[in-house]
Structures are given as structure tokens and as C-alpha cells.
Image (cartoon, rainbow, N blue to C red; front, side, top):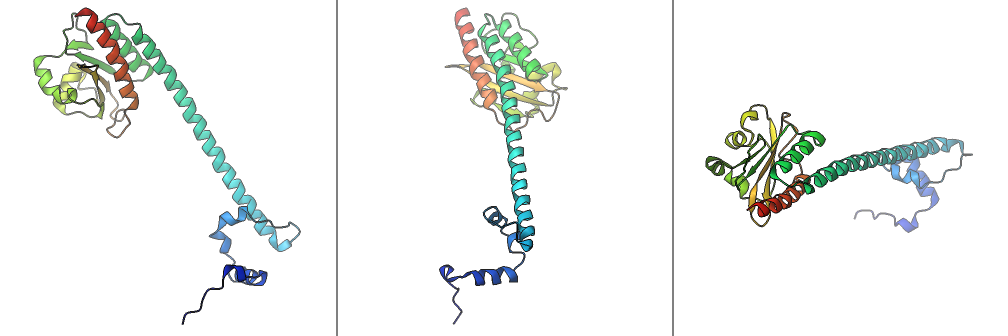
Length: 229
């Protein structure tokens, strides 16, 4: 019959001391216990434990400082992003024409958010097309149709045919991009943002900000298009 373990309540100080004497590296695998131990400094043999406790607490303190520093950095980054986003939204709210919208989007996304080019493609006719504002051509609707059928932004490297349709003469320079469907009760068009950096837009990145841009832009466009129809 196997020997039964001694119940925890039956352990006395001598057994604990004997166990620790036989296992001098016990606290190496149970460092968390050192935070709870009280060891008098007068005990010469306990100096190493006191030093170990101090080291554990110092390490924990450093980890907390690092974590706090990371949180502060994230908060600072979010604050900057918020200010940029606020400027873009206010600029869009002040737009009265499609050309105003195209300029505001290009200045914000290429200025504040470091994109390299933008393209605003609309299903409704565009009176004065520009480099980054135009109406879909019939052949473009066929190629870009799948992007219009979803309400979700997409990032990364697009299929070559879609990439060429969106960025046209700048397609050879654009290495990564983001596409945002513009929907407000009906499909209005697409917003494309291109970067010359192949890593700026990646398929794995979050699209919360892009979705927000799409929602704001869709409302502004719908207001202008409804007035001009």
C-alpha cells in the first residue's frame, strides 16, 4: 500500500524546516511566496532571503513602471489620433460640394494620417471629375463590384485589376491600400486610400477607424447628392 501524504494541518515547524533544508532551491520555483514572507534582518542566515525578497519586489515594481509607461504612450497616441480625426470630421461637416469633400479627404488622409493618395469613386454622376474624384465607368463597376457588395473595409494588396481601377496612373507606385464602401441607405461608392509603403495597410490590421471614416463620409455625401439630384 502506498504511503499517504501527511495532512497539511499535521505539519509542524520542524517538518517544514527539514523540508526546506532538503530542498534549498524551493523558493526558486515559488518566488511568489517571497512577497509574503517576513524574515527578520537579525538572522544572519536569512540575509539571502531578504535580498531575494527585495529583488523580487524590485523586479515587480519595474514591471509595473514599464506597464504604466506603455499605458501612457497608448493614451498619448490615442489623443493625437482623436485630434486628427476631429479635424477631419469638422472639415467634412463644412463641405458643400463633392469637390470640397474630395479635397478634405485628401488633405486629412494624406496629411494627418500619412497616406499617399486617395480616390473617391461615386455611382452618381460627377460634374467635374478630378484626379481623386470621379464617377464609376461601366467597366469599373464590373471589376469593383465585389467591393461594393460588402459593408466592410478591406486592407492590404488588392487583386491587380481592382488595384489598377482604383489608383489608375498611380497604381504602379501604390504598394498597399484600403478600400471603404460608402453606404447610406443605398450604395454611394467607394473610398480608396493608397500608400507607397507595402506594409502601411495590411490584411490583418483592424478596420475600426476606416469604418468610422466611411460612416461619416457616407452621411456627408448623401446630404450633398440628395440636394443635387
